[in-house]
Length: 318
Image 1 (cartoon, rainbow, N blue to C red):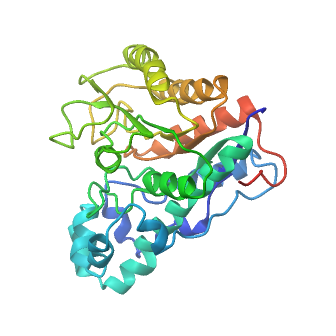
Image 2 (cartoon, helix red, strand yellow; image 1 turned 180 degrees about the horizontal axis):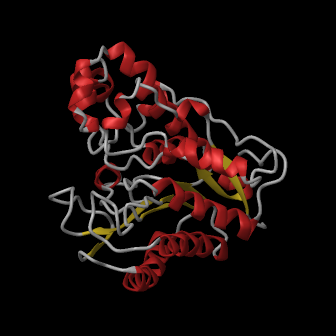
């Protein structure tokens, strides 16, 4: 199969709380900025991205307990999961119609990206990557673990068995590691800054801790060393890739020293490794807290479209 790129996005990913959302470290609307720039530069060839449906409660229950779902009736719990105390002062109905709505649509986007990747080779959800959420609680700006939900939904549909999760966000994918700890068919690989949240770390199947100040050359060398190990161990049918760009040198929540060019090369390396092995890959964008984080990820997505081409017409859907 010749790989092409499908882009998944919905305007429902946006969050508008009258400016309150701008008080958070994470730019919740960076995904919209990326999509708008792709459109403005003609990279989507005049066609809209493929729009998902919001995730259902039944799909969420494949990963998350009713304890978590019930906790979302409380503004206090939502504020705690998102590390945004100001949200506790807002009515839960407002949070449900804005922030929780966005998380539901973006989680649906990762499910859709997984389906599309099986048909066209590469699918990018311009959102998702909420890798800190655990079965019974959210944390670290994450409410639902979208990659875990997508893996369980699509596996239940009989679309694949063995999965490799590659997580290159600067923070360890602790929620994903916990969820799949006893799942022999899902291999979790996380490469992250070692002395950084979450502390203590969970145990992925393969964890690679990076030192403060790690630059492009060192980072890409470590990735080149360990990524083939992950592929060999996973023996996967499909790859889900969390491509957070908070490894950037000016990210306020981390201490690595990657450049935009280095992150673009990192993402290209992972996707190329999947394509060379004939493995479908669904990519989510995860973290990134520098003012120009959206532009870094725009550059990466643009590079993939330039390299593999946009899927023509309606992408094949499994």
